[in-house]
Amino acid sequence: MGYRVFIFVLLMITWVLLSGQFDAFHLTLGLISCALVTWMSADLLFREREDPVLQRVQEGWGVAWYFGWMLWQILLANVAMLKLSLSPTALQQVNPSIVHFKTKLKSDFAKFLLANSITLTPGTVTIKISGDDFYVHAINDEAAAGLDGEMERRIASIYRCEGAARRELVNASVKGNGNGRGEG
Amino acid sequence: MIIILNIISIVLILTGLVFFFGSVVGVVRFPDFYTRMHAAGKGDTLSSLLVIMGFAVYHLGQIHWSHFVWADLLVVVKLLAICAFIMLTSPTATHALMDAGYEDGIEPLVRKKGNALEDKK
Image 1 (tube, rainbow over the protein chains, first blue to last red):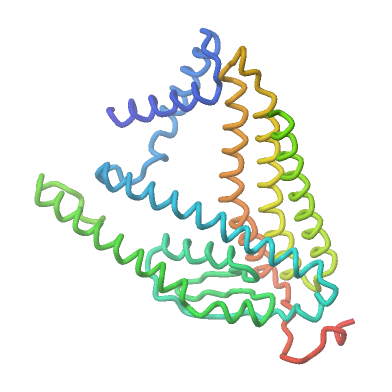
Image 2 (cartoon, chains in turn yellow, red):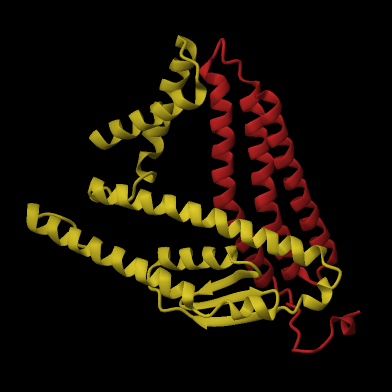
C-alpha cells in the first residue's frame, strides 16, 4: 500500500511539473489519470523494491555519468560518419566486415551496456547477441580494430564492483531482519 | 540578449542540418543495407539533438521575464527531456533494425582486403 502511495505521489509531482497549470480543472485531471495509472501499472516502475535507497542513488549517479559519456560518443560517431559519407573516396574506405566474439559478461544488463557502447562507437553496430556470442558489423578495418575488448574489460570491472556491492548489501539485509530475499 | 540567443539557436539548427545532410548522403552512397543503417542510424542522433537544442535556446529567448509564467520555462524543460529520450532510443532502434535485417536473411556485403568495391557494380 505504501508503495502505491509513493508511486501516486511521484506521478502527481511529474504531472504538476510537466503541466505547469495549477487550476482546479487540470489538477483534477491529473488526480484521475495518476490514480488510474497507479491502479493499473504501479508494479512496472520498480522491480526490486528491497534495494536500499543509498544503492538507488548510486545507480542513478552511475546512469547520469553513462549519459554524459554517451553524449560524447554520439558526437564522435556522428563526426566520423559525416566525414566518411562526404569524403570523395567514401566507397574505397567502406570495407565492411562482421566481427564475432564471445563475451565473458554474464548479466543481461552488462550485455546491454556493452551492445549499446559498441553501437555508439564510431563505425561499429551490434547486429546480434545470442547467449555469449556477439556479432558486430564494422564499416571498415579501422573500426574493426577498435573492438579489441578494452571496452568489455571496462564494463566488466564496473560490473564486478557493482555485483560485489549488491551481494554485500543483500547479505547485510539477510542478517539484519532475517527475511530478506536471497536472489539479489 | 535575445539576439545572442537567436544566433546560438540558428547555429545549432544549421549544424544539425549539416549532420542530417551527411546522413542522407551516406544513405544514398553506401553500398548495402548494413552500411546504410550505419548512416541512417548514427547520423540522425546528433542532428536531432542539435535541432531540438536549437529550439530550446530559441524558446529561452522568447520568455518575457517581466511577467514570467512557469509554463514558458517548462517548454524548454520538455524539449531537453525529448533530447534525453532520443539519446536512449536511437541506438536501440538502430540495433533493432539491424537485427531484423539479419533475421530476414539480408546478405551483408563483406569484402576481402584489397578487393575493390567497383567489382560489385
